[in-house]
Image (cartoon, protein in one colour):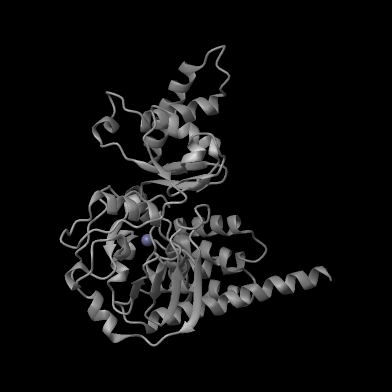
Length: 414
Ligand SMILES: [Zn+2]
């Protein structure tokens, strides 16, 4: 094996990515404008919708207005990650200006790493569109957001994308508060103190913050009784995050300041709670049971916690569907809407197993994560067998959106 073999292998990947980009662009162009292709591609490719939407956007840009970069991808000069840097930088430009950047940097693409290509493209964008800087800064400001990214070992990253002056002022204030907390006998580092200050300001009630005026949000902690009582050490699960060690779960559960809601799982008791359909809004017991059973939105690959989700009647209430655990699932608002689009069929078995058929006929089977095996993430088995789409399904699911909403303000943890 020589270095040339490695280079050839890498070029082959880029070439295959060019084929993928063309296929995506063509697929998108051939589908009706109303079709929800990102949801369908996400299921079939087992990718997040966020990833699919990004790739669709790159595919459209590369095949329509960035011919030189597309050519570099096809020739194996850059891979898709590098080509995407050009697409991301030029996304804010009109077609003719994007094409000008594409031309200008074409000979600068070889022998640069992805960050180098991003910088070259950024500088070129500033050159071809100097007047756009202010508009773009305004645009970026409208993109401000707070994100929560779950990480390993019971940790998560909470970050805010802010206008520079606000971010700097916020950091300075956090830093001052952390410095004031520093004492000889406090073993915490300045980094730890800053983190504790932020968590304290955001999570705990205090008279002078906006947080005090907002309702407390409950986050479910799924823990079995033996573990809570320290008789066992089975991993617990924090909704939206995943498994956390038993000792950490007990710390959260027993902390009087905790805003986490304990869900004690009895491993032996899996009996669904069924009530008559005379009540439309699910009684609290049913709603709680479904949220705990499903843990996350039941759409394949979606990890939005059920406490931020809608509760959906799989067979619509208006068509005789019962308000019981055997007919209800947790679906986030986005996938609740997908379910009601043409061509999608959802069927729930009495044991909680969900069968989904996509518009192109691919079928999926998913079991709720709770049941026989508390510790397992939702396991989804892709059933590759193509199924003839059932026209009648649309009629069964076409009724109005008659389902109860989660009632908790949407915060997207991803
Ligand atoms: Zn979802």
